[in-house]
Amino acid sequence: MVLTTPQIGRTRERRETTQDEEQRHGPDLPPEYCTYRDEGCDRAAACLECPFPRCLYDVPHGRQRWNTRARNGGIARLFEEGWKVRELAVLYGVSERTVQRALNAPGRKEQHHDAE
Image (cartoon, rainbow, N blue to C red; front, side):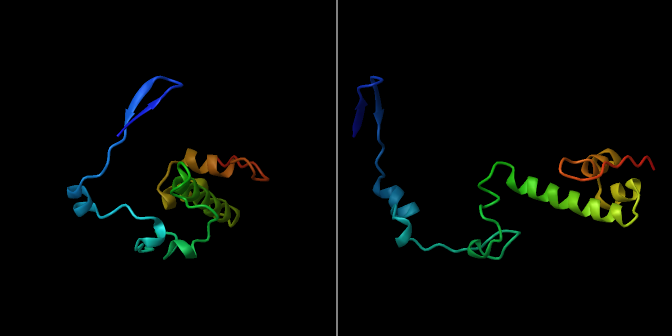
């Protein structure tokens, strides 16, 4: 089937599935007729049990951002308990500068400049 759009004057072909493709991949059914296994991810056992309002994998760099925020929260808590920047860097496997950035992140009340 060939579709022509008069606005831009281009022709675009619409490819129809062949019987061979349908046998390999199955028919293209609407979601309500498909079997879907909800296997979740590393944050929830199932998508329907996910604590996030939007899937971390649907947001660009969502999982990475969430992991960074969680790590920074842990760094801040341990720092407030008396841990030193150098100790936190070793514990989390990051540089001392990364720990300092986590402690000086926007939204934090105090600015920390621990040179140890």
